[in-house]
Length: 79
Image (cartoon, rainbow, N blue to C red; front, side, top):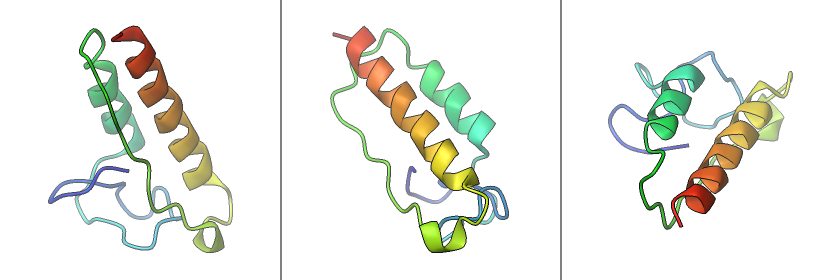
């Protein structure tokens, strides 16, 4: 997940992160931002801090996997 002042998922969605950001991005907002980068050259990205111990319903795992997929697709489409 992204880092910074307005980064990261809002608590309690998704719960599987060690440091949720108050006022952070929802999964929908993050995916919208990523999709707006279509056609740009993306050369690197990180998906960090999925904490399985806090992710009882695997909501964070699914969100992180979706973000990783979108990032890989952006990298391939921006070649």
